[in-house]
Image (tube, rainbow, N blue to C red; front, top):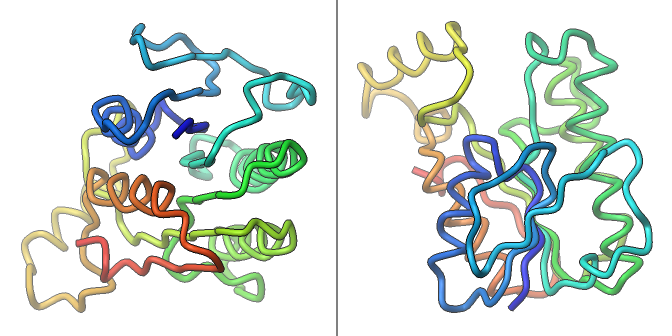
Length: 209
């Protein structure tokens, strides 16, 4: 199958890319990115401006999309900038892929995603989930991890402290609040894309341990 990956340079996206390139079920990967990626015979890395995605590019015609785009308020700098990355870009990709007939979309969302949430982060995650369901993908999977474990390029001090505390508490922490390894999230998302089971599916944080 041919896979379109968005967010290939992030923590979860890097793992998705590694798994996909090594997976015999995946014949080709198109990665939309803002910076170059190491070459691979199965990889077509396309540097794009997410604010001006080409609507008629042939690489929209794929079997599945995995979206691992995401940022933080600290990195984004404002609510507007955060929403652009976590809401507008995933939806822009989804709409164009769907217009070109792509039947499967898998999103890395977040624990607590709810369009009615009072918390900005989880509200935005819930809003993008809601809009994705309106695009009528034959197969739509929403992964909802909690705290994501792994080696990031950027330093997130608060997150590191939280992960250290959760790791120390171990089994005392309820399953849904335990650390979710980035590799586990990536594997679950890739498997969902390949299975392409009809309907809407939610992968909770307790399934990503």
